[in-house]
Length: 122
View 1 (cartoon, rainbow, N blue to C red):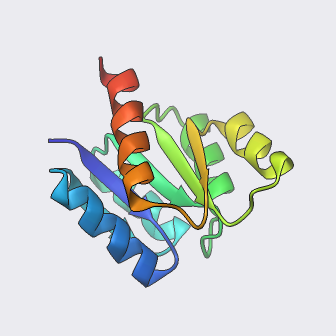
View 2 (cartoon, rainbow, N blue to C red):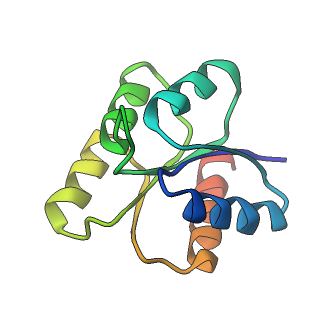
């Protein structure tokens, strides 16, 4: 079973993502900010992270940068209200594997999670 970290500031969106992914058999840990995400990553072996770019304390961009600089290789899917190309480019340059803009369909998140896990773990 894959273990996914969801770092999403909005509690309603986080719960929606957690439920959708749990229904597909994934083990989920949800946090509300970037500092909590880093704390969880120090304790748990995650297979993938979904992170909002607009997190408190450490935003999703900085979180991605720090994880890649310290050697974490698991796939990172950024979700963001910023749908402009410079933001997307920044996310990919910092090490994100995928980038999805809000609002999104939960079925698309499931498809992207599945695709990223397949590419990384096969």
